[in-house]
Image 1 (spheres, rainbow, N blue to C red):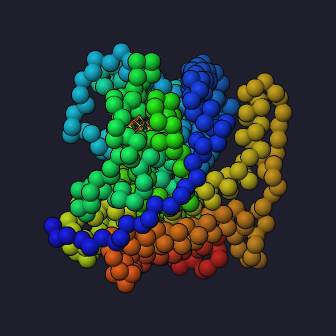
Image 2: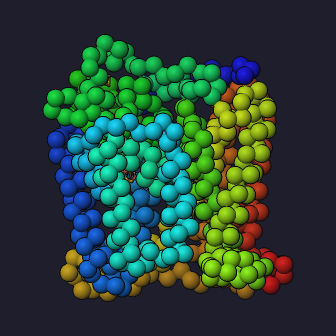
Image 3: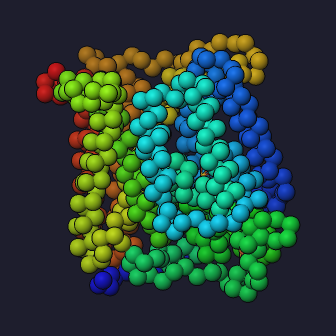
Length: 500
Ligand code: SF4
Ligand code: SF4
Ligand code: SF4
């Protein structure tokens, strides 16, 4: 592989360390954190599971179906991800079950062949993306309960058999997505200076070095643990952790174990800024982002309600006789979306690798992180729309579960259904689906430029390197995404071919 000219390393800047604040420092050293939260969430999970098996059959009133798929997978996970990275994993009941089982592990080694994100991605695509809507196990409480019981059993079994957090790292269907989206959060646990961290086999940059305090440290209790407390269950070594820590759950056990206070920091950085500092990017992470793009951009634009093209409706019943027309449409649009995203991105990765004179495999994951803002801004717009449309229903549900019989208007914060433009159906809810992604486009384009700038020394080459990716972002957002939406909301005329 030809050697790539690298940009000069930036001078490390002074950064805010949240653990330097007294209350947070005390919290990080408390034995009750995250234990109390883990126990509380585990008990809530057990109650939800019980409700799934023995509670009401009405999905919108069931703690498991509604709690898991309306509250957990959406507002809870998304909000914690964009604010605190994968902090959810510190209290997740499935992770806790895996950790408890891990205490009695047989200590087998997880097969090297599966030590990547492939199982996690396959599980997500097959189970949560394709099979869930077709079988609707997410709306039948007893089926949802069986699903979660199966997941919990799998987590316990892998914990018992294999050493380390195998289920969370390699099997959990949402693990890969949590990893990549966690990079947009402004908080991350770090100890190494961020400069010099774009390491790995990809572009011949040296691996990150431990900070000075760690070089003389014996035993490395942050990762290996002490007699009283386990080390990092995720197998991370905080001494070299920088912006790449997309597997850290912020459980803070390493901070409790570290004999050199202040070495491990909870650093605050600009949201999204870690996207262009990712070191050792993995192909599985790129695929994770492409899958998210297929769901949040392609499928949401072409496979939903008014945006479903007529020709897909017409063709669907004859495609797969063993699937209903609706399910056949759903699966077809998903597959087309996924293949389209992977194909378009791969073509540009070939181009980037030629421009960088580097191997395709090495370059493939690099620029994928730049596309993530498109997904995240789109998801945040969708979430805001959901809060405005259904916030009252969520509060009603929570109060009812606590025994308070009250009914609140779903549109608790007001109704926003009036069209913004006369003769269209484009209202505030619709605007929340189309406007945020344009902001995401700006951030994504900047991220592409910054990634390019971290790979080459001069500005002109960086712009040329980023340009094809920015062009693809424009095609994805304006042509593949905004166009069907604006047609669907009658902002622009509907061509007969697509919408009849
Ligand atoms: S990786 Fe999955 S199972 Fe593990 S803690 Fe995170 S969400 Fe839970
Ligand atoms: S325990 Fe602290 S000082 Fe020792 S290697 Fe880990 S982070 Fe460094
Ligand atoms: S690096 Fe520290 S905070 Fe992160 S998962 Fe490991 S022990 Fe927990």
